[in-house]
Length: 295
Image (cartoon, rainbow, N blue to C red; front, side):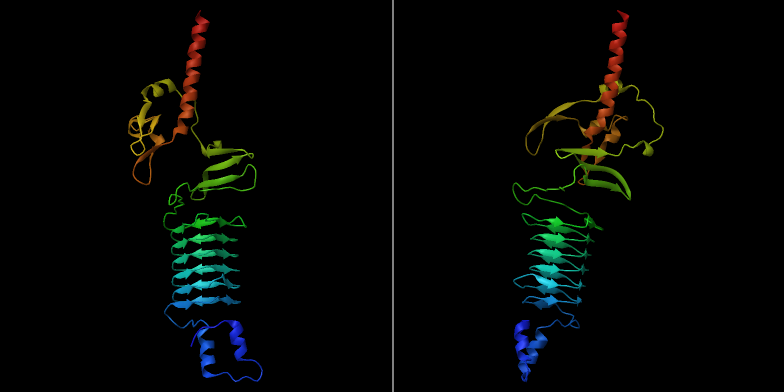
């Protein structure tokens, strides 16, 4: 009793044939039994026009893509060499794909997803946990502007596993945003293209989001408290210059420029010093004009 392909099964039931017990057994073994609670192992290609529903684990090891015109619903884990789903894919366990994954509809995975090949999702990709794309060219493509949504655990986009690896983000629309940052449902910043040649890093600054607006005072006094430093980075030994986050925390006017990063170390938003520097330059300009006028 073995699983055989459709072409072979058709030969069992040609006009005038009387299928044998072994042939009927092959027919049974060539189809999924959704009542079976153990893993469903498929070593040949799978083509389904309707819905493929597996309660246990689904393992597909076919040489070419697993084609499914309807929905693929897996309550356990799924390990696939290559998958092509014309509609939607729903996996409540983990998905491990070592080949290419092509989903023409939406992809919803409640567990982890590990992909060694390329993933192309024409609809929306939702991950309840973590998604790992480990191929040298792991593309996540959405043709419906739906994008990639992570809910639950922290989503990591990493490219450090091979030397010289890159994370590339782009589109073909001039002036549009590459990355938009949200707090709940409100936009708080973005990284966007300016025309076709430059990149802009935008922090929310709209007047509609501000109140108690007044001119900055004593900017020079603030700058006098800040200590620009030269130093070398411990990890690389590279010489650099900048500020020490812990020292900035001691200055009330700039302490909010310091934030705690995910590893517990402190970071500094250097862009926020721009307003203080401009205000200080204006103060100096006023002093210079006063001196010139007194002569």
